Length: 307
Image 1 (cartoon, rainbow, N blue to C red):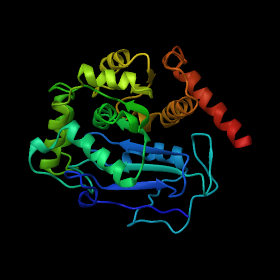
Image 2 (cartoon, rainbow, N blue to C red; image 1 turned 180 degrees about the vertical axis):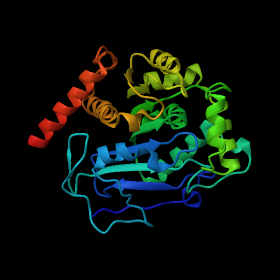
Image 3 (cartoon, one colour; image 1 turned 30 degrees about the horizontal axis):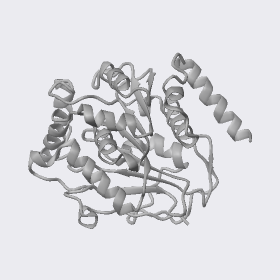
């Protein structure tokens, strides 16, 4: 039977840690997925991927626990979700937004501190390891988490990732987000500070590169918020374990191209499970066009539905 919970920072022993929502099944599981969101974003940003992973979009947390499981529904990653499959997905609000606590000091917001929050949440859930996916600022945090605790990472997916510095986001974008009322001023200024001060050292990149897990970097070619060039440079720095997937789309490519993004995530999961060699992974389908990728997804989905 499906179950889950929402936790606050006091229960996890982390400084100002995030609340969490759990999708999937609290049973002996096949794999766990840990999803991090971007600047000013909340846990529901991953809706298309949660549907793809579990076949469900309703959270199994203590405030909104469903009365029935989602057994028998098909997910878009090509597998039928049944009771007992054991797919667990945790998508959480970072500090400063949503149902998480809001520190008032900018110094309480860095990608390192937020990675420590994420690690504390993994510990609280009792997850030895997980496939870790991050979008935008969430991808920055995911990088820090992977460098901080590489033994906890099954695979790493970085969507629309960017580097730190005051030019990591366009001024107009920052202005628009700050005036949207999506979060408190403390939370927004703090998260913005985390992005501006973010930096991956050579040692951290080497840790990711040499720790044995595979990496996918997914990016929209029309993204004017997180520049494509940074994602390409990061992919090169993480060779041979990183694979670059470029899609038509902008900063929310996970919503604009959910099927192609889900396929790329599925390929990462399967390659990780099969212990694919890094050199094979980084060169897999290098020249594949978006059209071929979409056709591949449709063919894969049709085959799975038939079988």
